[in-house]
Length: 322
Image 1 (cartoon, one colour):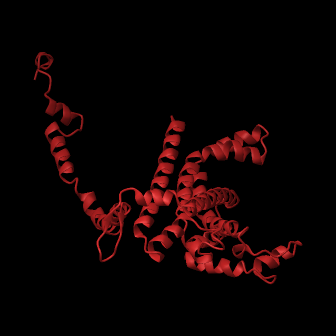
Image 2 (cartoon, rainbow, N blue to C red; image 1 turned 90 degrees about the vertical axis):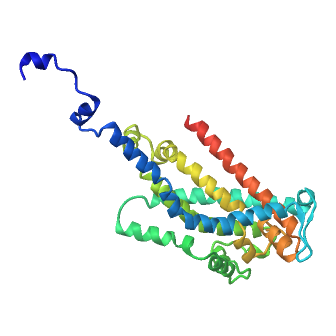
């Protein structure tokens, strides 16, 4: 082809341009998209077994509990619709208000204590090394130990006599013996300490993952500016872990509001109701007193409180991130 013919030749079509650019033509791209769209059900196929288990063992019982909260449950005799009477009974009960207060205090103490102790442990164990890996694994042990074993261990440690383990330790510094879980004045605090001991290692591991994302250059710049170790932690580490704090707060708060096993095994709400929480009260109303409708109403109220807390924290986090 001559030079004049090349100058007056029509421009290449879209297919030729796509081929020249190394891209597949539009028809091939549409075919690929249609194939991908045709396999949209593949992830759901893998999730189906877990979703079926959740549906049968979690979501259907939740729906049944919501229905039962508006009924007077009479096994083998048929349920009777009572509307919001169960909720009025729960909210008007002095025992429920006391249990709710104990739950809030216990959740707040365990959340703050486990997060602070977890952050301190993470700062102490940050870094690489075989010894640190072993220490981190040993510190994480309380999380993987069954809660029944943890409760029995602390029951032995809290033995109220002078030769009890904890009493022996505080006796070395001249403090008198305490009743711990057997004393109404110290029982709730004793359970709180147990929860912090078990929850702090979990928070530690999350903090260790968050510390890896903090810019090391900020530490060097702060050190050059003359910042002390505490100032570097407060002005560099804590702001860098803001998202980790919000996530851990939600998880720890939900864990604290739903506390049951350690209270049930250590004190069962005693002595004199000083450690009664919402979950143990619901258990007693539903399974011991056979007032399943009232117990279901209490469970729904606890779920609503947890949901509201989660939504509020999420909205605050979104507002701060803007």
